[in-house]
Amino acid sequence: MSSKISKANLRKELRWQRKERFALSEDDTWLHILNCAEFRDVTHIASYISYGVEPQTRDINERLRSEGRTVLVPRLLPDRDLEWVQWNGESEPIGVTFTDLSKIGVAIIPALHVDAHGYRLGQGGGSYDRALPRLSAWKIALIHHGELTSETMPHEEHDQKVDAAATPGLVLRFN
Image (tube, rainbow, N blue to C red; front, side, top):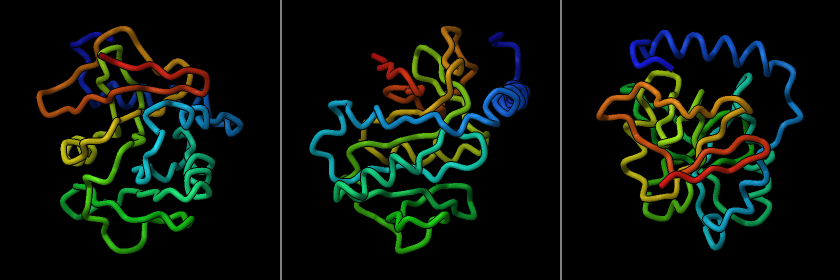
């Protein structure tokens, strides 16, 4: 990835590639991330409700809930920041805002692409870059096969790194 490519142009290209490659890839699962040591003894996990060709999270979220854990999903605020609400199994983040962010031990984050340094390219709204600094949780980005690169992604000072990235067959920790 050339550092001369703008993040907006790169996002456009990566969205197109994802749509072309993974439009029919609903069988992939990321359940193996739950075997990571970082999930052990964690009672509150921030996750997300996946849409379209994003790495799907329903099975992860349902498994965590069935284990008696609290699953929190983001709700977009008018200023494009995020707040967290307890997931009730619905397809929309509804409910009371969860405010004790110190209880969140793991955060499962969406990404379009991740580089070998832990920089992720998201959808471009900056919502996660605003929200992640408030979490002391271990942060893992979910991506499809082929969306991890050894080349440095374009990033800015405010961009937040993740601690790990997962494809359907791999968990890669950074640092």
